[in-house]
Image 1 (spheres, one colour):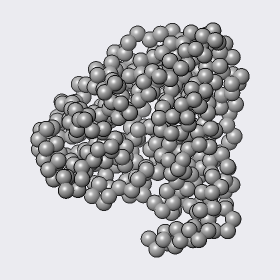
Image 2 (cartoon, rainbow, N blue to C red; image 1 turned 120 degrees about the vertical axis):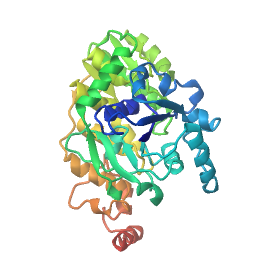
Image 3 (tube, rainbow, N blue to C red; image 1 turned 180 degrees about the horizontal axis):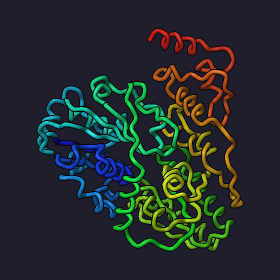
Length: 415
């Protein structure tokens, strides 16, 4: 058997390794496994490639060959390039020759709705596809419709059980069954990666950085202010040494902006290696508090390491997130509804109680109403924190249905 896997993050590669160890991918060890990696940062040339990250050494043995998608399509960007229809047969032959592929038994991808995963799916054809989740996004609807030649090949969704009891929406409109990756297999992989990571510093609090401004969720100034507010909150709680973990795609620009604030507060700021997964720090440091906006790392810290966590800034992001269909909406909604909310004075308050399953299904419907008509909510209050009035009116969920809403409902009924 030949299995072709794709990953763009160390978290994704760890999920793949856990799936391989649990015999969820391949044939139990006798087949050939080819890993394709990509760096999807805004400027890939200055980012550390996945296969050169310190923690990847522990995962390398699971794969027989490793190839860089960036090198293959350079100088084009992985998130932008896709073959034109007329080029697909030629590009398929070239890629198969470059990777030394004969018959492929399984293609394993993350983030299948967007390039480069969607591009690879269109070029490595005639084989079943397994999709594995890239964190909390698996609980949200599929970002963009998939062509029939791709969605008909998807056989399952592998995902970590980050929110027990909550079923993923991703790919459910195509009837794709969801399959949980064993916790034990994932934690075993985390321990391996932690053992090969650089020496961990001594700190009792941690901030998880993201790259919100790069995705136009907030302005760069607002993102810097969020990090400063998190640091002030931790200082107010008595923490004098704080680890800042930049997002792998963000580099260290956020850390440079945060240092002056740390000096003013008398806090020692330690900037962690952005290429080391947050889970390795959770396992080694056991911090007393992990703070972030809506990073999946907040949920893995609580779910797998029983660490205290708190979110900050989710209200701002929920207000700014546009369009409503933005695929980050479900992750930020989950974190906002599940985790304690940190205030700048250092206090943390639990969020109001909510029916999480109903909330996720309703938000998912409002994001992609045509794909998920069966999720249309009925008789539930619409918290303005999660539901925009204009969106509700468009879908006929607030007041008198608009002409557009009536047309949408007619089209859904026709389908």
